[in-house]
Amino acid sequence: PMSDTPIELHDKIQHEQVLTLFRQSPAVIIAHTIAATVLASALWGVVPQGQLMAWFSTLVLLSLSRAMVGQRRRRLNPGPGRWRFWAGVHTAYAGAYALLWAATAVLFLDPSQRLGFILVPVIVMGLSAGAASTQASFPPAFFLFTGVASGTTILMLLLSGEPAAYAVASLLLLMFFGTSYTCLNIHQVLERSLRLSFENLELRREAELANAAKTQFLAAASHDLRQPMHALGLFFSALADRVNDQLDVSKLDAGVVRPNIAVVDLDPLFRQLHREFQAEAQARGRGLRVHLCGLRARTDPAMLERILRNLLSNALRYTRQG
Image 1 (cartoon, rainbow, N blue to C red):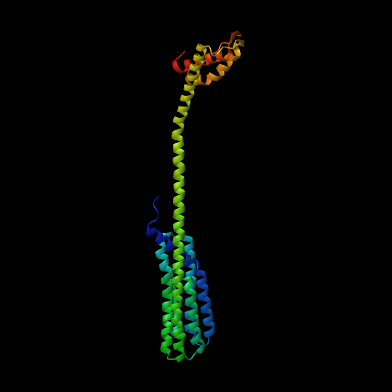
Image 2: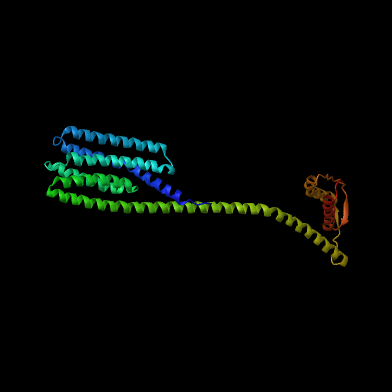
């Protein structure tokens, strides 16, 4: 059997990785919603409420939309050939979340408001750290989210001119490199594990196919050999009978075997021979009739039985009728 081509194996691996993305979507949605709720609650009354409500409402609607898309994908259950489309859908949502969190840095990262100035970078760092594991099965989604959200936050921190902001920006930058390294490591481990899993499945499938082919071959060989072996058995049986007959005749001629004369009832012997040869006679389209005479004979019972059996056997084999 033909094994999977590299492209087919690649598609299967990517399909499983996209499945992992969508399996973790509920946790990602909950994390973003909780973080947004905490930020909105902390900044309520501190920043313009209109901007805060617009931002929070947009994030909640985005989360609801992502949850609905995830449910639709589960119902559709697409095959490996559609992994690129669904990876693109997931990456688009990651980009939308990234823009919303980048907007917090632009709108709410005000040095004069210490709570927002501290809380926004902390939340962005926490979400980036979580994305290193939840988005590891598809690194482009991770780099899009973390790069946009963290990069915008770092830029706004540097533009603020605050000395403390430089330290936070440096910490956020180090956090970006650390989470990127973690994400790539997790991705490599996951991809290697999936590859080995699919290769083992392919080896098992080939072994099962080989075993089935072997069983089929043995069954066919057994069927093909059974008939000639059966014919050989019949041939040797007939040959053995002839050899025995020749030996018995030779022994009689030499006077080695002497008959055991006794009085024999013929009817039981005739009935026995009729039972033995009736089926063969019917199979050959012959008629076998026995006339019971109620007579006795002085003879050797074994020799008489053998003589009659040979006569009946030859008559059935070598006569066309009668």
